[in-house]
Every structure is written in structure tokens, then in C-alpha cells.
Length: 515
Image (cartoon, rainbow, N blue to C red; front, side, top):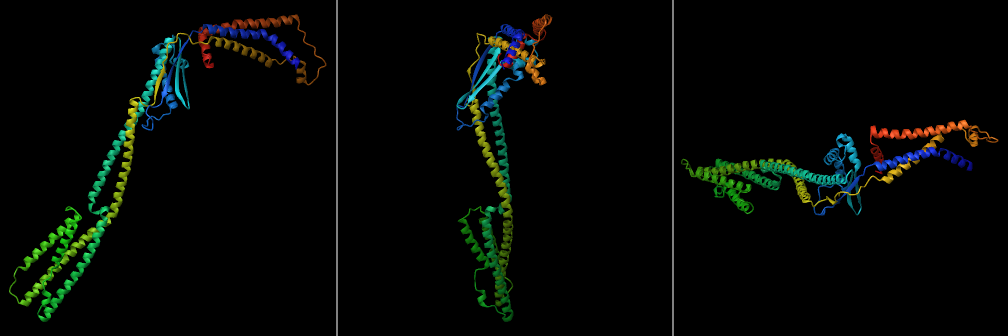
């Protein structure tokens, strides 16, 4: 093990001049670059994302974007290509701006811009915007322009959200209001077209149907009894030539009886309904018809026929009274039957009308619910819009603007020099390791054992001749001189024909985070 260390120690000292050459070149290059790079100035502005001044429990803001997400949106819109090129042209950020292509301008503007956020649970959300430029005034101008753009973009973002939401709900309320009016008109038209067959009056129609059926049964019994009575009187008169006195006793006629019942029903109905109710109008019409019938009967009775016998007059009078009563009964039966048929049709239609009306009313309730929710949302949108207009919601405020730095903030010259020296050390170490990897000659007894699996009795070192030593040292000197000449020449060529050397180094330092 000691022999191995001694062997590498001797190799290290043998290769030390070339390794020192790499270190000296890289360190010199780092020092020259650090001294040659121009001074840079950097300034920083600090922004604070404030919470709404009015609690969300009182007024819910429409803009529900998370704070970090909102800052991401603002940041991405801030460093757009158009903004960076416009700022660079307006403040003449780079000396050779007119000769630079737009892509280079955008790249260097983004490299010189630093945007950092700090946030956490129980901590305020801060945004730091920094910019590095060739003068303090340019750096301050750019940073303050960034701040202006951030504030304007945040205000525009929140205002556009509230305005678009407000417009949407205003249109939605108007549209749903029109739908409500249309649905109300449909319901009113349907009720007007089916006024006699609405489900809400179904109990009355069923009760009226029962009453008319009972009345029809009674009228049919009275008609049958009256026809039988007339037949009996004719049979008796034909048999005896006389009419029994008992049959001509004065009693209320059916018309008079029906008129009395109708009057009683009208008096009873007036206690329950108004004069315009269909029931009142129907009873009044029936009473008028019965009174007209009585008046017609009175006129008919008052007309004297030619002289006849007393029995014939009595028979005619009795038959006339019975015929009038039967005619009245038939008219009542016909009217009752017609009313029953109408009621039956209305009752049959009432079920289908009830289904259709329920569907219309259900649609109306659905639209009404959506309309109420839209009105509530519109009210909230108007309140939120008012909050954003008066700047009472979440907003970004400026804590510190970018001031004009008086002392250069960069470049970090000691770091650049140390970086050059570190690069030289890495090149020297790489040179040493590369020679070891590429050198396949046998230099130690252990290599004989490992390669040929033999154990030498003794090892005789290589005795280098004077001529061989001179050739080897001349080759090392030549290589050293070539490196000393070619490396500066290459750096000069790059600095003159390709890109200034300080810019190349600056790009490398920016990538390493040392710029």
C-alpha cells in the first residue's frame, strides 16, 4: 500500500508543472474576467398580497382564485415577450440594443429579472421583484415599471372576472324572467280554455252530479206517475163518462213545485257564493224559465174553448193540467240530462287537464327556483363588483418601490476568481486522471502479476538515457508553450469574432447562480 502511494506521489510531482499550468491559466482567466466585467446595479421592490377587508362571511368575492395561483398568473403575464421588449426599448436597458435581435433581448431581460414569492401558513404572501442593469437608474425604472404592470394586471384580472360574472347573471335573470312570463301566460290561457273542467272545481262537479242524478230519478218517477194518472183518468172517463172530483182538487203544479225549490236553492246559494258565481247564474236562469212557463200556462188556461159539457170541460182542464205538468217534467228531465252530460264531460276532462296543469305548474316552479337562484347570484355579483370597485377585496399593495442603488451590487468578483481557480483544479485533476486511464504501459511489479499472472523474482527499473530524457523534457516544454500560446489565442479569437469574453463568462455564471 505504501508503494502504491509512493508511486502516485512521484507521478503527481512529475505532472505537477502541467497541472499547475491548467490552474494558473484558469485562475488568471477568472481574475481577468472578474476585473473586466462591468459593474451592475440591482434593486428590489416588495409587494404584499392583502386579504379582503370585508370578511367572506358577509360578502363572498366572485374571484375565488388561490393567492399563489393568482400570483402565478400575474407573473406569467408580466414576463411576456411583448412586455419585456417594450420595457427594454423604453428604458434603453442594453447599450447595443439596436443591434440585438428580439430573442436575445427577451432572454437577457428574463436573466436579469428575478421574481421570488414567500408564503406559508400563518404568514403573509410577499412578492419580490428584482432587476439587474448597467446603471442604478435603469434598474429602478424597470423594477417600478414591473410593479406598475403587476398592479394594473391584478386590478384588470379581478375587474374582468367580476364584470363578466355580473353580465352573465344579468342576462340569465332577464332570460329566466321572460321564461316565467311565458309560462304564466301559458297557465292563464290553459285555465281560461278549460274553465269548466279544472281540477280545483272537481269536488263541486261531483257533488252537483250526485244531486242531478237524484233529481233525474225523482223527475222520471214523477213523469211515470203523471203518465199513469192521465191514462187512468181517460180510462175512467171512457168507461163512466165522468171525471172523479178528487182528481181535480187544486194542488201545486210540478212547475210551481220546481219554482219553489229553485227559489229555495237560490236563497241558500246566495249565502255561500257571489252574484257572479256560475251556480247563482244557473239557478237564476232556471227560475226565469220556470216563471215564463207558468205565465204561458196561465195564458193558455184563460183562452175559452167552444161550449162543452161540464164533464168534458173538467176532463180537458184535468188533462191540460196533467199535460202541462208532464211537459214541464220532460223539459226538466231534458235539461237535467244535458247538464249531467256536460258535467260528465267536464269530469272526464278534469283528470287530463289536472295532469297537464300540474306539468305547467311544475315547469313554472322549476323556472321560478332557477330565477330565484339567479336573482340571489346577481345580488351577490353586484355586491362583489362593488367591493372590487372600491378596492375592499383582495389586492396587491406596494410595500417598497425600487429605489436607485448608489453602490454596485455585482458582479461578485471574488466568486468569479474562485470559480476560475476551481475550474483550474478540476481541469488539473481531470488531466491527471485522463493520463492514468489512457496509459496502458507496465510501470509496477504489481501490474505484471495482474496482467500475466506471474510473480517476478525482482524488478529492474527502466534506466532512461540522456538523449531520451532530453526528448521527453523537450516534448513537455513544447506542449506547455503550445498551451500557453494557443489558449490565449483562442480566447482572443472568441472575444473578437464571436462574443465578448465577459458575456460568455457572465452567461456561465448566471447558469451557475454566481452572476
